[in-house]
Image (cartoon, rainbow, N blue to C red; front, side, top):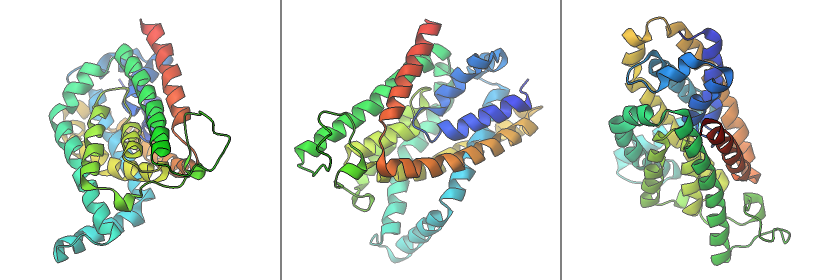
Length: 304
């Protein structure tokens, strides 16, 4: 059965890796092998298990951490949605952002309801997670390369003459192409569709949505902000929808551990998003892409 130590460690892991673009689901599959937690390894891919109920608590905790960090912005977004419906207009930035988030949430919400359980059972195996973690690394690095090429093609001013042929261009070194206020609804829908691939263990939700945002012309800061805001309703809804699992027979004997894990996940999520918001003001996805490639390759070799 799940211990409190395991619950807290997995909660901290969930809170960090859900927001860092390195795949929380992939790490939740791989990390137990490092500690030799064979009880967790075995139950993760079972159709019904207490571990799936435990993950519900972690999702709710992570979403609460995000809500606390973005609490003022969510109040503004909620107000913008109310006034937009009342006045039948989409003129103010908060009104537009509210509808962008709704449009982007639809694809992942529908696919999550239909396929989340099946994907978790199918791909929650260490070798599969390791391979897709490498794929995630290639997505992050590829996104940076595409962004650089787009900047060159569009003639956007790049500030540093020392960049040469470097892969990544930070926001501090270039003028913006497009801001979040000018993101189209079709582009928001595409970002939402990209988020569906995060149902596969090893593919990062925040990573793939950020890359899609970069490819659509956003800078790192706006891509990260939209990704984190978009993650909040998706993660919270997933947790609430599956809450009966935790309250039912699957949750017997692990509700206390789930509460401890959820608290750890919420704290980790709050400080993770606080760090990453600052990080993406001046830095890129490059280190995370390299990390995913190295760790994914190491685990692939180990399990092959």
